[in-house]
View 1 (cartoon, rainbow, N blue to C red):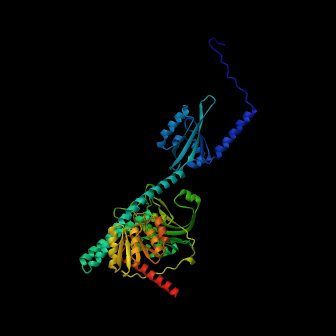
View 2: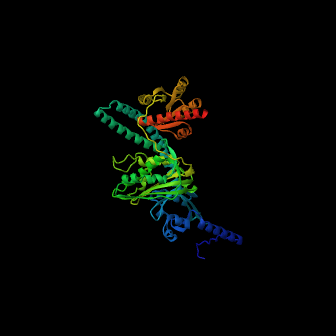
View 3: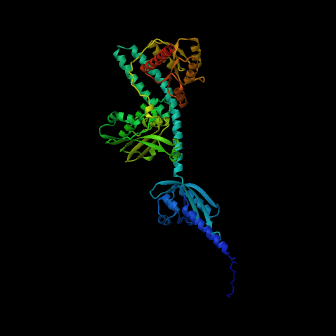
Length: 543
């Protein structure tokens, strides 16, 4: 032995039992099986980040083959903005500061799409404590992120709806005053051509404002819908000529209507307006011409679809799809298309309320709207409306009514309205029609006046009033005492709960603000005539 050398004894190796070897092999076999069959992505990486082994789920998630992934490292597929935080965790893991870590990050798929994931990493060391490899578990968060974004969008739309609904209500009260006074003035300046032109121009502007607020109410789901059971295919067929005129000659209109389409229970006028809005939007997306296709189908939305879209429940729906071959929209625009006043059109070419009206109508009808668009490939908007189980035989036939302008009368009418200016206009209109008009500021005053007067034939009342008594509350209390009393309710908007109350009330009609004098005259006269007819029928039955 050379001088100066010291022999070191080799570490004593403990004998390994056969049972230990079998247990180790069984453990490895279980790990391999779990690794290969895991529904989420799994991978083994060298300390420098190179992939040692990947499972099939990870390959599917990322769009790479196993060979392609093994030829690269995790740094290559990590989003550049997440790499610094990822490497910081890896440094702490390798120097023993932390035993494992978990972080949300983004991978870049082979097709270039960014995929959100939740990454969990643990380090495996050898018997000397040296790093061998890391075990990475990768959970795809794409569906979860999409659901979160849809929920956030729904919450944002609800908040915007609350704001726009309140603004529309206040604006409708102002328009009711403007339109009402203009209509009264129009009668007074009869024969003065110059004054008539000016009042007509002001009337047109005010009515345009009323249309805009109606669309805001549709978006915020605070309009009163006149729902009826109907066949939507028949409405689309009836709209064909109007659609042709609206989209122009350079756009081909195609329809593909399903056989035996399900019935729906919605406001038919609002449905037609929604389809027309979608057609006009499609026209504007095809300035050089193209194809507009309207398709209908009976569809069943399952629990999985409802889970992805929390604002719609599973069930049977009638679907109306409007597709165009136009320019399409980029992804950053899609999240905003249903917001009121948002538009991609040039200034003066649109109010930005078309799609928001469609969205609000569908939601208020307990339905759903789905929009798909891709730049250069066009857009498809689908409205899902709940199926109505009523059979065609149960549907009451609708008959047209001849409307005469300004039918008058002499009965006594009580006007209940908390806004003094709106109340004054309503009273003046009814007095101009020949009625004897009384007025009250709120529900309690109205009940006191009904108790004092026995000649009141009809109450014309606002729905939203102060002091805890709404117009529907007033109608319910008053009709319990005076069964023959008629009610006409009015409002700039109505909450869903008030809408249900209106539907439940007997002998009550509804007139939306702002209203035309001719509409007021017609609905008042109709309500009073129905009361007389019912009274005569009751008297005849007693004879």
